[in-house]
Length: 154
Ligand SMILES: CC(C)(COP(=O)(O)OP(=O)(O)OC[C@H]1O[C@@H](n2cnc3c(N)ncnc32)[C@H](O)[C@@H]1OP(=O)(O)O)[C@@H](O)C(=O)NCCC(=O)NCCS
Image (cartoon, rainbow, N blue to C red; front, side, top):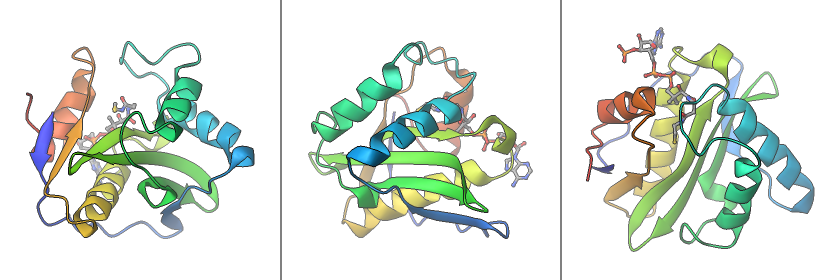
């Protein structure tokens, strides 16, 4: 699914919630994998099984999704606890959302909008005009979510 990157939606984060960049480095990889797994619990995406999160991080670091840097590895922290993630990469002038997920307790709270706006904002600041995401056709919730932000199927 693709979309043109428009002005990011402004959402006031609840008190205690911050979006920052995930720390990089060998020691943080396990924490990143854990957060990806925790934020994709119950996902109907058929790829979300086994050690997919570890493989996703390896592929991200190897540049398979495009050029990436910690500035595009966003996490949401609530009172210091990680509750959401949005990972991005850039390929052929398109911002690619590698994964975006919210801890089950934080779904339907507006946090997904905050993370989506944050990652699109990072892409926009790099001068990118379009964003892309791959979604499993079975993951209807995710498809509806992306459609709300103007993503259309290609
Ligand atoms: C896909 C995903 C990120 C969507 O996030 P979400 O919080 O569940 O979904 P939404 O933001 O669309 O919110 C769902 C409903 O919550 C309600 N909601 C949204 N913001 C709200 C707020 N600020 N206050 C109260 N209710 C709110 C709305 O009723 C919304 O329904 P709507 O579509 O009618 O507007 C999340 O379900 C998830 O992490 N899934 C697992 C990982 C995954 O599949 N990721 C996508 C693959 S890349």
